[in-house]
Each structure stands twice: as C-alpha cells, then as structure tokens.
Image (cartoon, one colour):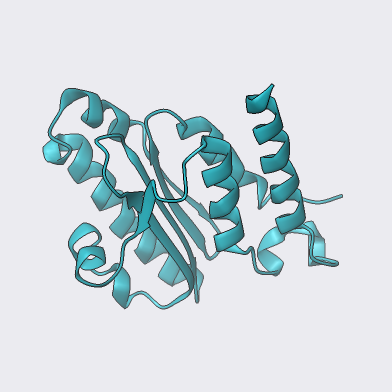
Length: 165
C-alpha cells in the first residue's frame, strides 16, 4: 500500500510540474520544466531518503563529466549516492541551445561508456551502467543510471515532454 501511495504522489508531483499554463503546440519544451521538482519526484518514487543522494559540483563535476561545466546551462541538477555502492546517478540539464544540449549529451554518454567499460569496477555495477541512458528532448538532457529504478526514472523524465491535449 505504501509503495502505491508513493507512486500516486510521484505522479501528482509530475502532473503539477507539467502544468504551467498554455503551451504552444502542446510541447513541454516551450516552457521550462522545473528540474529540481522533477528530481524531487524521482527521489520520492525511488524511496531515497534525504541524505541518500548528494550534489556533484566543482572539481568532482569536472572529474565525472569533463567539459560539462563549460556548457551553458539554464538549469543543472547532478546527484549521486553519498555513500553507497548502488548505481544511482542522475544528471538533469536544461541547456541554452539545442547545440549545447547535443554537446552535453556527448559528455554524458562518455561517462556512461567509461563506467560500463570498466570504470564501475564490479560486474554488477558495470551491468547497471550498460543499461544507463542519456535522454534528450530539445534543450533538455538527462543521464539516468539506476540499477533498481532505471525504467521508472526514464519514464518520469519522458513524461515531462509528452504532448498535452
């Protein structure tokens, strides 16, 4: 029952985040998607406690994603587990232009490839990274790597960009 309630709350958060007035041609990319709100919904649906994930910034951001800090961003949310061997890495980014989004996607894909090809060390974590996805919708880019929640998190990202009728 608790799991169902969490999913219902997450769906309501996503709906609330997606509602923001009239959108030209019904595309969510015509208005900003609040990435902090999207991440909060992801965190809730996965059952991650408030101290489970931590922000990645500064030197660590450059170490994980070389060149990403140089891509102009309107919004950037980067989260990894504070202390865990679980694969849960989330990057949500709104770039200034579609060209910037393409560059960011290439940087994020390089991270996925490096982890899947041995950077993740253990066979279980490498297998999770092999399923990780870099998703792009217009000027929005996401890296989603989650062993236990991969498909659900991808769906939460994609829901932000579905046509509204």
